Image 1 (cartoon, one colour):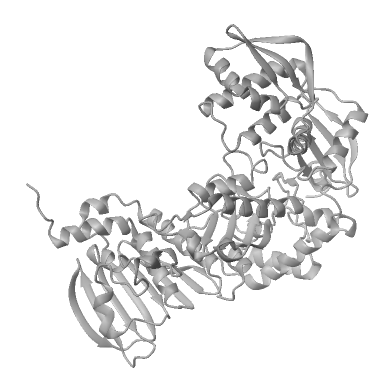
Image 2 (cartoon, rainbow, N blue to C red; image 1 turned 135 degrees about the vertical axis):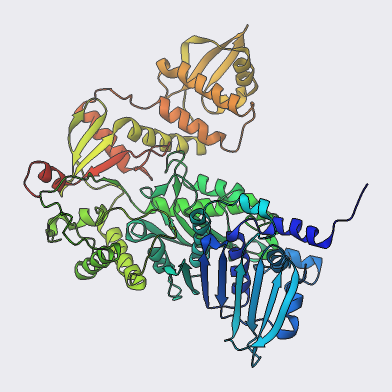
Amino acid sequence: MIRILPPAIAAQIAAGEVVERPASVVKELLENAIDAGATEITVEMQGGGVQELVIRDNGTGIPADQIETAFARHATSKLITAEDLFNIATLGFRGEALPSIAAVAQVSCTSRHRDAANAVELRIAGSEIQDKRSVGAPVGTTFVIRNLFYNLPVRRQFLRSAGAEAAAIAAVVTHYALAYPSIRFHLVVDHKPRLQTDGSGDLRAVALAVYGVDVVQHLLPIAYDAGSGPYRIGLHGYVSDATAHRNTREAMHISVNGRTIAARGTMAGIFDDAYHTVLMKGRFPILMLALTVDPASVDVNVHPAKSEVKFRDPDYVRSHVADAIRTVLQSTPTIQGWTVPLPSTDAPTADTPQPTAREQRLSYLTDLDRSGGATSRTAGGSGQRSPTRRVEEDLFPEPVSPPLQQTFHPGMRHDVDAKAAGQALATVAAQQREQLQGPLPELQIIGQLAGLYILCESPHHELYIIDQHAAHERVNYERLMAQEANGKIEIQPLLIPLRLVLVPQDVLLLSQQRDELLRWGFRISEEGNDVLVLAIPATVAPVKTEAAVLQIAAALRDTGGSLPSDWRERMLITLACHTSIRAGQRLSLAEQTALLQQMQQCANPRTCPHGRPTIVSMRLDLFARQFGRIT
C-alpha cells in the first residue's frame, strides 16, 4: 500500500539532505550571515556542536513579522523565478537550511532588524513552534541550536567523537575566514577562544592566524584577470611553493564567486594539472584562492550541501587557472632546504621555562622587523648572522621553532599580530626575488657521490646536492616538450628492427595507436603476434627501447586503450625517464658541468616530472654542529 508520509517524518528525511553533522549547520548559518551583510561572526560550540551551537552575527537581521516564514520549507528571499537559478549572486537560495535544522534540533532564533527598535525571539523544536516573544538585543541574528538529532537517535549514533565534530566545524570556519578576510571571525570551543581574525581584509594575516609563520613564508601571491562578459575570469589569493604541501586536500581553500567549495571533481583536476611535475603523486598544495566567473557560467545547484559547482565551459576555466598557477610557480625559485634536527649541549631541562608558540612567532617577527629578513637561529644562539650569508639564509630559512601544527584544529590558538607579520613576510619575499638572478644560484661542482648525486658549493658555502637522474629527467622533459610543441620529435631508424614478444592485449593496444606513437617517434609494425619496433625517438637509447614501449603499453592498458587528455604528459614523462642518466652512472666533470648548465636553462629545475626534488641544500652550520664548532 502506498502511503503519504506524516509531515514530521518527511521533514526529518529532507533535513538529512542538508544537515549531515554539526558542521553542516554551521556552514548554512555562516552563509546566511554573510548574505545578510555581517562584518562580524562568532561561532561557539560545546560537545562538538551536538550539545550546543551558537552562531551570532551583526547582519541586517530578520523582520519580526517574517521570522516564522523564515522557518517554512522553501521560504527564501533570494529567488523569484526558475531563471534566477542561473544567475545566483548569494550563498543561500534554496530555503531549506532553517526548516531542516529546526526539524532535528531545539532552536532559538533571536533577531533584530536594522530598522526595528526591538528584537524578536522564536523557539522551535522538531519543526513545532514553542514560543515567540519580543526581547532586547543588538542588530543582527543569534542562533542557539541545542541537542542536535535529539529526535533521531540513529543519526546521532553515526556522528564521530566530540573532538572530530569540533574539528569539522573549525574547518568550515577556517574556509570562510580565508574566503572573507574582511569579516571578523571568532571561534570559541568549549569556552576557549581558538581562532580570531581582525577583518582587515588582509588575506595573508588570516593565513598567519590559521597556519602560522612556517606555512605563510612559503605562500606565493597570485592575481590574474582575463576575458570579459561571460568569459571573464579572475583568480586571486595565495598558492604554496613546491616545498610546502600536505598528504590530503584539506589545506586547499577555494571559493567560487564567494562560495567555498571542496577540492573535488573539476577543481581537484585543475590543481593537479597546475602542480603536475611540481609535487609528487599523493602530495597536495596549500591554497587560498578566490575564483570569480560570470554567475551565468557556473551552476551552484548541483550538490545537496552546495559543496561543488559545475562550469559551463570547464576546459576554459581549467586552462586559465592552471596556467596562472604554473606561471607563478615557475617565476618564483624555490629549492628545498635540508634541515636536520641535531642535539644541543644546551638542551633545556624540565625546570627551564619554555617559550609558547605565540612567543616564538612574535620573536621571529621581531627579528624580521629588525633585520629585514629571516634570521638563522641556533640552539642557545643570539640569532645574529654574517652579511655574507644573508641571501642564502633568507632563501632557505630553518624553522625557528618546533614545527607548528600543519592543519587547523580546535586545540590551536593563533593570536599574533597577524597584519604586521604579513607585511614583514611580504617584505622578505620581495627581497628574496630581488636577490636571486636566476632559477638556481651560481654553483661550483665538488664531485659525484655513489654515482647518484652531484655535490656543489654555493658562493655562500652552502652544500647543494643534485639528484643526477631526476635533474636529467627535468632537462629532457622540457626539451621534449619544446620539440613536441613544434612537431619536431627527432626519429632514429633502427638498423635491425627490435622484435618484442608481448601479450595479445598489448599488441592490440599498440597497433590501434600506431599513428599517435609515430608522432612521438616510435614507428612500429605487427608481425604475427609480435611487435616490431622500426624507429625510436633520437633521445632514447636502443637498450631502453623495450622498457619504454612496455611502459607505454601499460599506460594504454590502464586507460582501456583510449587516449586521455593527459596522454601528452604521460608520453613526455615516459620518454624523459628513459632518456635520462641512470642512477649509478659515473659522470665526468665535463658531463656534470653540462648537466648543471642545462638545469640552469630549465623553466622549473627544482623538481623532476614526477614531482620529486632535483636539488636540496644543506646549511654550513649543520656541519659545524656535528664537529662541535657551535652548539
